[in-house]
Image (cartoon, one colour):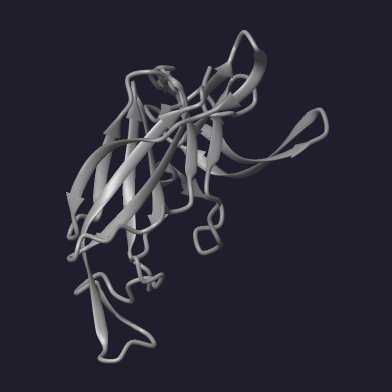
Length: 201
């Protein structure tokens, strides 16, 4: 299995994790999280490359030339961290909302650096989630299916009074997402939906 470096990206209240593959200079992925060494094919005598550190880069999308070519967007990656080969997760806190791009390179013990990994991106906002509403009385719970210009609701259970209801998660007006572990399911043995909603107001 290819090891992954997880970048936990944060701005304001938003958190997101990006898996990023990294490769050695030899062009091979490491087969296991440890020892993170690979044998370079076609070498006599055999050569082994071992991961020593990971370089992390980021850059925000901006207008490249607002005066000469308005509307042309792009980004430049700058190195923001060097971490050792044992790290599996790294937190990046961005202070400016926008579309951010990320990449990593790997450096072996001889100092050879790989090409950049594939670039990944995420739009980070400074929107603060609304606090949950407390449902005042027992209420029905639904799965939602979206049709053109209409939401279809299918009853799958109930939630007790006092359940937290989150209005800002893309549910129909007046409805909010409720925790699955609070639901008393109509069919307790059947498959469970990923998310359910209830009338919050």
